[in-house]
Image 1 (cartoon, one colour):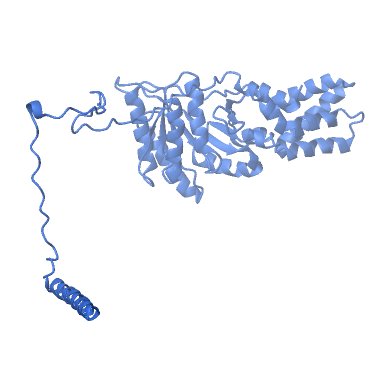
Image 2 (cartoon, one colour):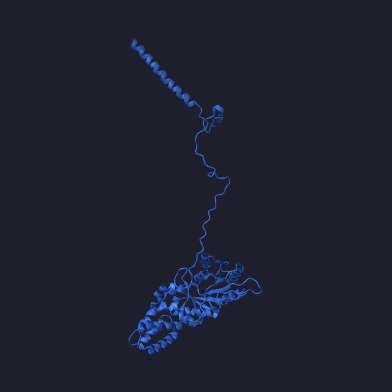
Length: 401
């Protein structure tokens, strides 16, 4: 009996527990879901404590007044340092200092002639070899024949020939062929202005075919003049070659010479005129004008260079017209020389890249062709490798010690 009563009680308790779970579950499902975006309730900011209730201040890193920037203050502008103006190497004796460089490229001419002249018997074959050596060195046919005839006479009179006598003989004949009497200075003297105004600077035009080093030579010539104490203004009148004006300006900046330039493909004569005008205003000693070197047609070249010179001469006379020739082109350079000589009155020659050729006889040939002296020679790519031409130093480099 007791067992039955206990079973009934357990069943009742179990039934009640199950019923409670079901009802609880149903009630839980009937609760409404919370709103999707219920507003967040934030507590109001706490009031600052003052007086005795104030908090103990915390130690924090502090900046000095130098570290605190002023409101709206702009960052300091950092300017690049201006490169210092270079001091070019003095021109006096520059060719002598470059003698080793020149002699390395000219051994074929000078030492070849000395070797031939040192033979015990100078027969016709030897003299023909001497002629071939001179012609190969671009001396030219007529000057070669003249030199050989003079050498024949001198050797016949001399009789015995020691190495020292032969060297002296050859040196004298080469100097005679090149010439030592010509004025090889670059004429940069200014002239007084008409009406008593500012003096006109010396005006030098540089002409030549593009590719001969004309613009570079103009920049190097500016260094030569600055080294000799002259102030220079450069005129970038080669407006048809985009890089020419930039190149010339770079050369000028290195020695403190200002460059006057115009728009690309602009009027070269206008740029040249403005360059001389600026030279007068600045009181410069010399104005160097780099001209275009196109050789499409002789007529176009003549018109262009002729106009540049006429326009410039409205300020004052052009004292020097220098023709730049590449020595490595040899006899081909003479063709260019003839064209320019017909276009404008050449007063002097600049031979570039003379250290890169064994044909030093071009000095003789070009002087004979144009009737004007070689005044400057380029002996390398260095900034100060343009040297005044000195016949004695040149011949000494040809034949060696």
